[in-house]
Image (cartoon, rainbow over all chains, first blue to last red; front, side, top):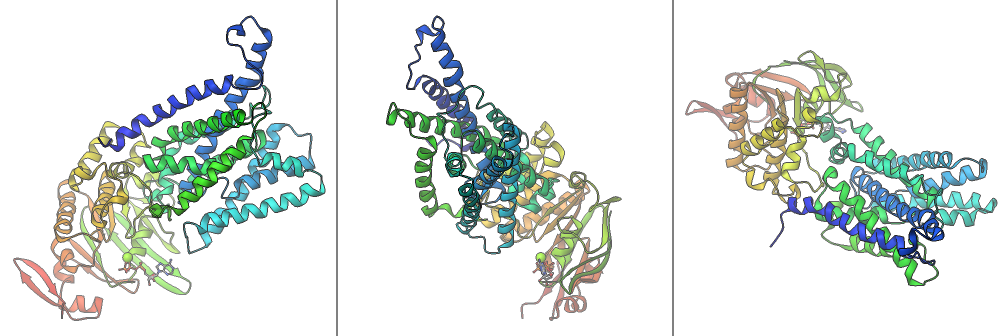
Length: 328
Length: 252
Ligand SMILES: Nc1ncnc2c1ncn2[C@@H]1O[C@H](COP(=O)(O)OP(=O)(O)OP(=O)(O)O)[C@@H](O)[C@H]1O
Ligand SMILES: [Mg+2]
């Protein structure tokens, strides 16, 4: 029996939620130091481990995964190109460049200040990309993200130049490679901001869908295209900035999750946003668990695992012949 | 009434809409005809504030389309572009629901659902409602866009070549539908047509453009004539009366 599209769309968020829940439980109880279930209430040490390390880590994974997937969904929609995401539009590299700038100029700045500077850089870097692709007449499906990747390379090169002179290359590579192993209570709470921003995206989802249908389409129904673009890109920039600052970039996550979800459920953002967020969380949970058990008791950074899977899926998506709807 | 006052658009040095003054009525079917490049789409795009004007103004029932809040204009006037197309994977119903956005801000009310259902029925799309629009034929997709504009339920409905891609059955069906909307709901339909005979049979008024200017304007009897059509298009027409309609022949 072939399920109707609306049935699939209706059950999808529940299926995704049903996947996230057990994964979150596994995530809490996997680790180098054992958390003893039974002893939780009697054993102070177990409780501390749970509250200060395990739960924060799981929350951080869920928030970062969900928010990044939402950021990618909005970006691919506004750019009208399925291969545009924070990691292919220069957003991540621009955020890292911003972070480097604060670290060099005002190293003592509070984390929120760092996030804000990174956000401003991410927004400016992405805006430059959008301006560039609006200039080129030949909007080839692959050409557009290539421009973004090259632009991101330029931002990264500028960053590397200054990082090298200030002995920060090591720090830079930490930002570019997501890793949840350092997450403890007090070190991840900024991620709630990313989660909040992603929630905000849900409220304006119809704007973004309309803007993704084109400027004329949006104008006709009274949606201000410029505001929708600016709002959507700001949300994506904010999410990216928070994630890069707090845990480091998770490459390709914002690209593959929205692609897979929209392939099945279509492009009505309001309808697919919850599923996208949950699927993003689920994927990062899986990758993080795999990273923790693969070379136990050591860890492989989640960025490496998502990046490996993600780049393979990215290639597969590009090579898929039927992907002609990716064109602008 | 839509009042167009000295509306002008130029690209570089070329003036493509040249100080056009027009008053479009608050009901009835008004057709815009003229050769390729005459400026019909440019005019309609400016009237619907999709394209900015270089000079002049447009007001819909006293509301300046360029200055008023976009959402306010969206409740008075809707436009179907000549090249409306998208790569977004949304269903016909989802597309049509977007027409309700100016009224509901995305939270569909009972009125909205009724309007969507009515628009789908009008455009013969009930069976296609759950299909993604990118899987439709050109004509089916065109009907989906028309249905969206109908769901928007504005007094003024501007359509740029709505008969594009339609077979005779659906072209005639759409013209009948537009006529009914004007007669039964008192809407003002303004549409660009290349088939002068559809314009002749269904319009209350025909406006002919050439080189960015209005060259003929009047009821079909005045514009569908050998002389006027010859003047607009620069080729020979012979107009015949057929079953009460004025039909132009121009095939040889
Ligand atoms: N973006 C643009 N840049 C430069 N010239 C343009 C642009 N858009 C339209 N034009 C020119 O303006 C003129 C009027 O174009 P318009 O699209 O309004 O014509 P039209 O009457 O709708 O023609 P058609 O019947 O082919 O649709 C044409 O000569 C066209 O080349
Ligand atoms: Mg035209």
